[in-house]
Image (cartoon, rainbow over all chains, first blue to last red; front, side, top):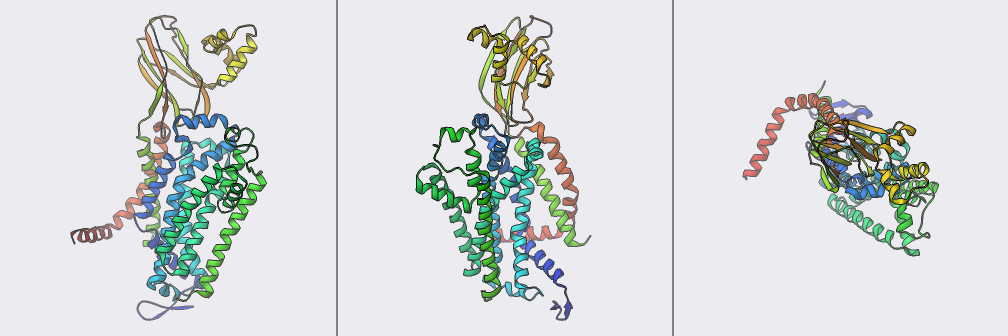
Length: 291
Length: 211
């Protein structure tokens, strides 16, 4: 495969090299110094400040009632992922909207298309740069900070930690997929960014309201929300264990409480939905998008 | 090492350095006392058992001792329900008031430790007046015994407080410094190699500000 080089001649460029080249260009744009460093600082500070363990004596009161160690580990991870995930989402949607969206808006994408790459590979390189690296950084920092704070949890409850993170990352990926699709369809990054932020807040508000109402319709809302954000289903599973005081004191017995396998199904369903959105985005980018 | 490889290694170095630096910075936030839970003053201090607390690595116990003698402080992993059940088993005929006083008796605790080995979390001998901030390694039930090894003599004023820390400085100091040391060389190398670029960016930024 040949490609036009900047001096006007033709040079040989294998596909793998072209992929790495696009990835390197995208990385230098998405992870421009000191954006990544600033978010690293935010992740660390937010992870420590917003962990469940930091809510003063209230957290200790809560821990007294969580009898199983798995539930306790999940509760801590849920606290750790709460606010820092918002920063992760901001970074990812910023990359999608202002990276990919602006490439389409300004026509820079045409330059990328001159590389000997299929459109699918091009989008993959863009996504690895704008989503993959950020998620890896986020997980690396969270696990590192958790290990420094509570090494026994990380060494003893690895499956619970993995499951909690898998469930926690489903919703940001869903929002990312929607932002990607919007950026591709509208060819404008700002709309994708705005709508994804609104969606996140709307989802949080809806889920919180539905969680505190104990009616049949609110149960359906919680179930639908659990498909989009499966950490809700996992949370319900751990909260509904008979030893947990939240079930005992705040919820009546008829509130929806999934079994462990049901919670896993919800995580699976959530990822199927994410996969579907990304496949639609890939299909649109490959076949329908006119640049 | 080419320019791109250096950039990758350098940026990873900067990130590792920042993780360590951020943790150190957060750990500098001072511990906050959450009320005084018990305070005792004695001119012939012999021994004392603190209340039974559930502590975590961010929720600790502070013991402030004012004394003219060295005292022996022992942190133990015992819950109130555990010691209650054990005292009921040992002294089935005593009333509720006596039962509670036994729960806070150092000799009873020592007997409990004989039958339940491996419950000692930490031993500290104070040098007269001292402040001890204790955070356990995990979420666990903790009580502390304070004894005068010389018997009932000497003045002692003891205040026990629960404290909340965002992150315990003792726990994170070594890992954070290690991260900063690991991250520094590649970060410095990358910064030195890109010194001109940073200066150029700085000039561009200053020009924008002037305009």
